[in-house]
Image (tube, rainbow, N blue to C red):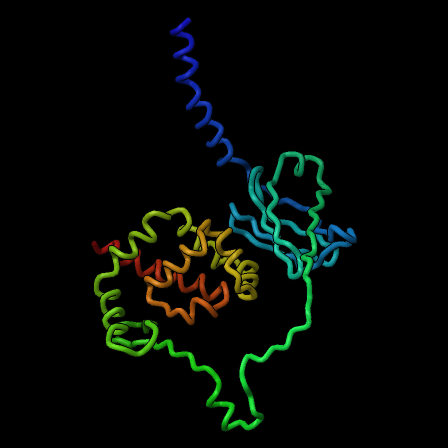
Length: 260
């Protein structure tokens, strides 16, 4: 009896591994569904749909319909201005029966009267220009290198920081990228999909990026900080610019890592 029990226990990891392997080898097919407003049940046009597993994107047509490559257990990410973002897991039943409807819920905003005065403007151009904030982030160009490097404000430590990153960045970047190989392999796929790029160009909240790369916002900031992008750039850039910055930094890391 004990021998039988030991045999059964030894087979459990094999069953688990087989199940994971089956999930990874699921057939990718065209998946079609409709996105509607949860309150009105009207179709929603131009909703961005991203398959986080296949790294493919699309948008809904005027009837709210979309078609995207997907496999069972893939996760679809829905994003639409004024509505809550939503993730939906693709199931066998969705393929089998069709006519799947995805309902998005409108965001509830409590609006109050607000007086916005970002700058104290006088109406006189010569005076107002002097009162506007100036981006103090500076880029340093080094002879022989094709790109410039951004390193914050103008002081000797900023130059030292840039030179240190260029001359010996591999160890620093290895700690950032080396632990996240799967996430970084998605960078090229994301950049090659025009629908995903269009969505990222219109967003500044990093939410879609964190879902696509499976990184936390703090991880993204760490990568950009250690690649010498200024706080101003990290704060104001849209998600597409952030993606391109991470990708550029990662490509440099691969070259440096290859030469070690």
